[in-house]
Length: 508
Image (cartoon, rainbow, N blue to C red; front, side, top):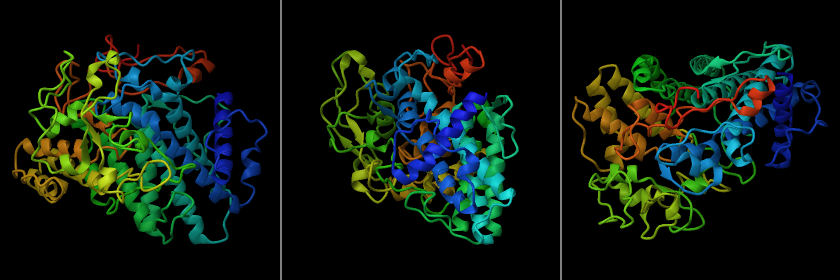
């Protein structure tokens, strides 16, 4: 345990330096870095240290691993290239994730990036909270409260993504003795810890007045009120999207989801790309510098079928293509958010199921909503629409169908899609909510479609897909602890998914 925790410690310290130097590739083995006590010698050291933690969290969850990798695994976007584990995670039928230290670096990083970096962000927040408890101060009570609130928020969102992504993780706090071996905690306990931290962050934010340090989130200077709202929204997301099955989804605390969403964001949370530390998977998931015919991701055919039910949900496998490749839809967003591309850019021998004639292009029609994901523009990580759809779903699942319909009909289904209003009762309300989650929130929260598909219904066969259904059979339902970590303690690596694990939830 000491080896792994030391590695996390060094990563935290390296990220503090990276915020200043702009270094992207961090050397986690650099033993010349000072220890935590030397870095946090005075209160003035705390903001820079915490800023490094926010960068770590961002890069843990919003880069191509796991964002794009789980995007293809959940049939949100399609890409056959070998980068980021995409080809292997989108095979049909699905293969298990091969959790082996002998694998290629690119493939191992599917689990290593979110694992070590989220743990690192949790570790950073712990150190800031402990330092404040031990008497370090900025000399201003309001600023000390800003730091404390931000640290609880960071720890909450780091814990939350560990709970969303992995079957188990380490739940540590400011009092954890890192010289002792830690026990793994279930994903349910990680989510509970995340929600507790976010409730604490919201409570502190509502009890104090401050503006969040602008170095924490690229391009944003949130007030205490805005930070409280964001903490509530993330709590709603984690409670709703952490379910691994439809049964778990039904058992979720939807009353708490509703309460959090009702106190959630009223403006999109979208950090600005800076080309140094703040960048993400967006550059590969929508139209980028390569233009409409560029070689990166397409809209998965399952979502083309959602927009146009006359289209098949899986691209034809006979080599003859679609009889009518141009989709039509009552949804105005087919024209505003997507671009038709006549040719295919993927290698057919890698699977015709990757083919699609559409690319996501909302970044072109609304550059103020979504930038390039590299060095310019916003990167929407949590939108007000997402929050409202969580509110609508909570209302529906609590039996308040008319109220849920009112939220849907006041939202993007009508205002952007120009679709007819839904009825005030019936299953079509939930279908409309899920449709909006798949079309309107596409390429916003990282792996959002993956989290939604695994919770909304049974796993589906690769050759019998439906547009708004569950994950394909054999898709890993969550990620395993990286093999390299397990081997430190002489534990056997394990996998999820494949033919022997149709739900993707049973260790292999």
